[in-house]
Amino acid sequence: MKPIELSEERREALRSHLQTLFATEFDETLSEFRADEIVALMLKTLGPTVYNQAVADVRAHLQTKLDDLDGEVWAEEDR
Image (cartoon, rainbow, N blue to C red; front, top):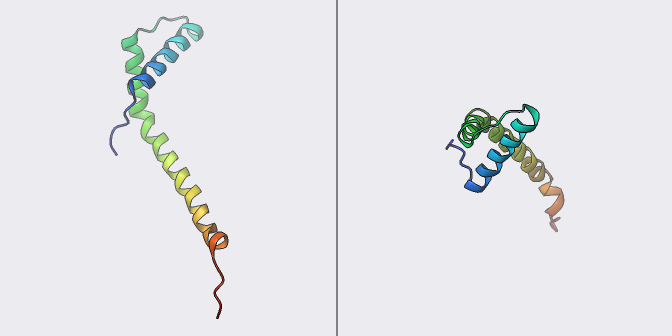
């Protein structure tokens, strides 16, 4: 699996969210550098697990649709 990449806008949003969380919940100022490091750590440690779960969820959803395909589009043949 290739590394999970975030757009700069998404990375900035996560950084801001972390900084707000630390300020309100922990009364601690979190620098941009530290916030970026936390985002990188979360992507490295949680990213593959979340990604794999999403793939499994999509696979199960698509399998359900494929299982229903015959009932939805099957045409009776004249014999």
